[in-house]
Image (cartoon, rainbow, N blue to C red; front, side, top):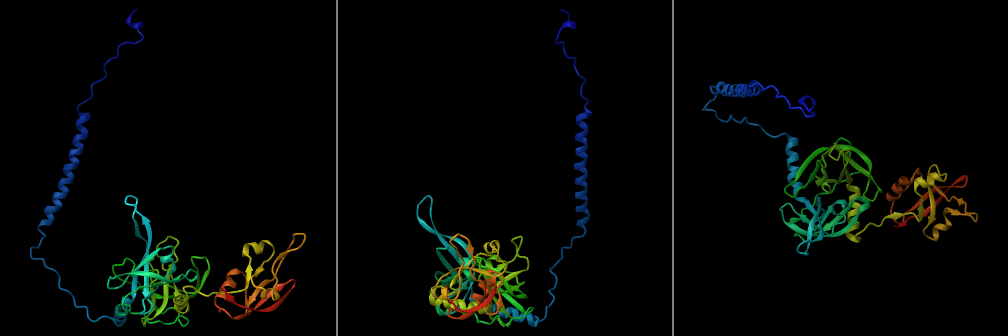
Length: 385
């Protein structure tokens, strides 16, 4: 067999690579490095002659006196900040290694001193699900707190600490019913427990409604553009006289960051709720002696507007109102539909709950109900929920 017939003929050696194929890229890289070095070195050489060994700090220009509104803001903060506290909510947890039970921080927020008897007000969501809480006063002293009472429906809670009276300066209480859109407001908080913060703004709107952590509406809320950051929850909102006009509670933000819209629970509500919590630990909430249907269910069975009564909760109510029931064939017989409360129209469940929350236990209210094809008025006493 000849080489021509060899299925594996010997390979011919290829051409040798030129030395410039290696040297060319290296020379190019070297030129770039040298060029950059010349530019940097040249800039330094050119700037060296501009140095002045006698350079000194410039003379400070006298400012003059502070403006009147600046002085008043500084004085307001000076007086109010000692009443603002830092709150740490705690939970107990067993250590994995030692198996010892210890308290660990769960969340933080702000609060303010209500009175010299040791009562501190904050948001309910600040201490929600906590097993203990600690209050840090303006002098950085720490005090174990007890829950005196809580109202999740209005996002308010009251803690009590055993601090001396001279450490408990209370904020002066103002009013919220006479606020005006555009007037100045000041939000003070203690978000990190290190020092107090102050933000300023105006009342942006009044009579707003937000949802509490129980999904019930909180009415009459103050809207402000004073920045309310998460750590400021539970802190006070003050007017220009340094009076408490609200409790900072929430922000509206699609992104989770502050977007210029904050909310505060009005002080007129605080001044009703807080004393009840101190007296009874809870709120005696007025309620109608009825059970009502969810709006979605009522709409599915033909109630287009108003609130459908499903059941009655007291024997006396059976003489006044009619519940929803089934006949012998199992068909639904609609009960009374509440369409007005003391003359105010009721379109849905939120309307009714708002009107009831504005009343008091023991009040007698007039319900306008649709029964069959007619509307009748019924006087119904409110009971404690």
